Amino acid sequence: MAIKPSHKQINEIAEHLECGMRCYFNLKTGEIKTIINMDTWEIADEEIWQDEINEIEKNAEDYFKFEGMNSHESFNLMVDFTNYIDNIQLKERLIKALNRAKPFRNFKWEIDKSVVYRQHWFDYKTTRYIQLVNKQIELFKRDFEKQVY
Image (tube, rainbow, N blue to C red; front, side, top):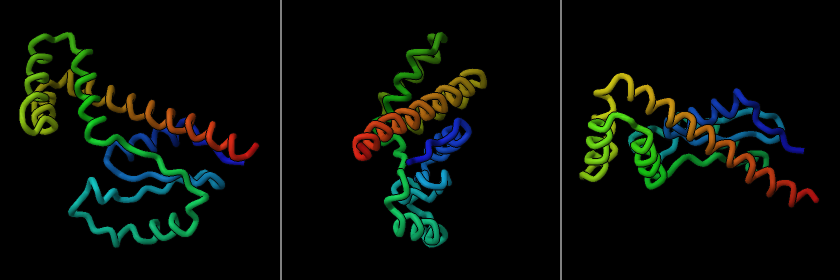
């Protein structure tokens, strides 16, 4: 029988994914393994993470890999956030930022200038990552139950 992540672990997994890491959950022990995502961190040294990578590869059937957001999903997250902003001027600046070249950098630059909305952005993004992890758990649970029965 597979172990399901606790609420605290779900938050931890979401936090790691939000930082651009790869996150694996051991279905037998409940242990979380986090490794560098070479797609996100191109200049990182994968060798530092080699023990964890070897463990995951050696026991792949014991691990569930949580998927973070791809760039399209991350972009849509920023677009969705603009719909919640009640400050019309900031909302317009964010929409313009998202429609220019380098939308991620421009969005960050605009949101970082607003102390109040910057925290709203972090809270919103965290909530959405937690939802993403929970959705993957529910999808996996259904798939797992099909395999067991």
